[in-house]
Length: 173
Image (cartoon, rainbow, N blue to C red; front, side, top):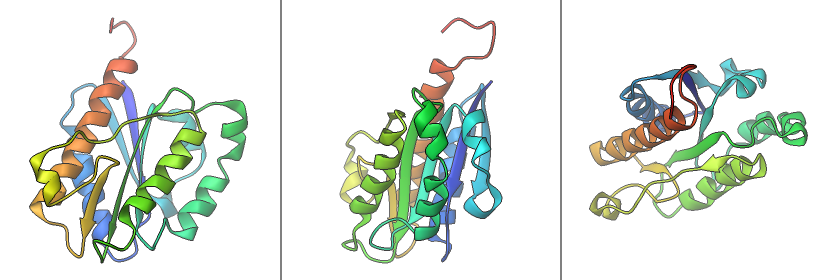
């Protein structure tokens, strides 16, 4: 069964609320197992066991230093290429719409690209006029139903692609 690791740092609760919605999207896809982990409760070895990584951080004009430090410890996996070919995606939440949310998403995506991951975002929709980004799911100030819908869609898209790329043993894709 394909495994998605949903890994996030959250300080004020907004990012965790968005992570919960991403998790709902992942769980909506049959044949995928979800590992829903706060940064403090996760180990680098979990990156080796997952088939996909959805990375989330509060927007503090960029990702948190704590998440950056945690990911810096994945350097051995970068050198060996153990994450190359796995699916990746990102999400963020912050207090201001113009506070650098897309910059935070790009920093998170940079980490995934550096590992050679296959990065997935969100296609344009009318909902994006109010919420989200094609780079990943977002929330500003509060987590609205539109934000949750974007996050669920991101989780569903990642889980669907992961399930197709990494089917259960014996299945033909």
